[in-house]
Length: 225
Image (tube, rainbow, N blue to C red; front, side, top):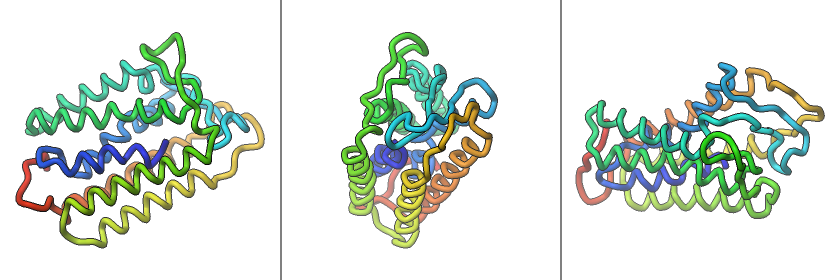
């Protein structure tokens, strides 16, 4: 799952008590932002294995802090505390935390069994990355449906939202169409996690733009700036 992770953020942003779209985009990928940062620091690990899954050659063999259920819930709790410290209300904190936590459950659909509950032990994952005919339409439907939902419940400039939609489609196409490696690469070069982090930063910046150019239909809203 890549752009599908943004669907909960986009839908949540239509709540009058939710944070703006930009912060919610960061919340949606906070777990992966932490993961790729930890890979760069050597705290978690990934390697490229040709054919590891049909759609993704990345063997995410060590990620106890970010992709355990307890770890994801910990990041969600930290997000809620951070929201409160920045002046957001409890509803905004709870909505953002739910978006953070949604990451683990969406990953559960697509990952090969590499997710844990407590950082070790049994591993979980339904493996839809091995079934492109299911995973690809699902990801497009989640994100496209969320964007249409957001567009229908907000008003304002159209261009930023169109640019965001095109950027989401572009990064997903790049992710899908990038060729798999021909040999095992362990560890992966730093360029790989850095590329992911740049993509998250770009999409978040566009989401901030959209959030500042559109408002909910029907009146003002209370949200974290």
